[in-house]
Image (cartoon, rainbow, N blue to C red):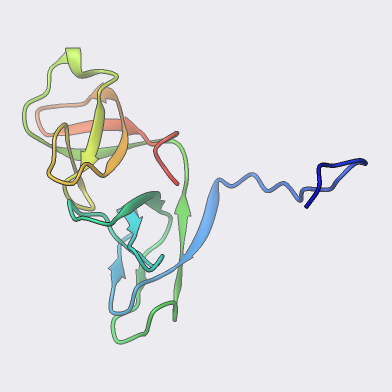
Amino acid sequence: MPALTQPYEAHEREGLIIAYPVKANAKIWKGALVCVDSTGHLIPAADASGLRFVGVAFESVDNTGGGNGDKRCRVIKRGSFVYNRVGSYTQADIGATVRAASDNEVAKISTNNILVGTVVELLDGNRVRIRIDNHTV
């Protein structure tokens, strides 16, 4: 396509919530950190190779017994959320990036480095608030 020579309607959509096809036999819980796998299907986040973080599940979807894409799950693409933390954190970790340890846990370091957010608040000895903006694809 050539460069524009007249106005173009790009059909802007805010993009706060996007629906993704769910992987066969996957169960997504509302509030879970979620990723797409190498086939582009949604699964719960994990410290596993080949995953790309897409956001936080807006709803629970059970595709147990279903095929790839038989169900779709809406995913929140930005905001701040509270998750369990793996490892020790101090106030100096505000602004640090965290990675998926599971669909409900974040860690400062991990094997596969699936970046999911930036620490914005330490809530207690077990939980941290992260901001996912700029970490979703």
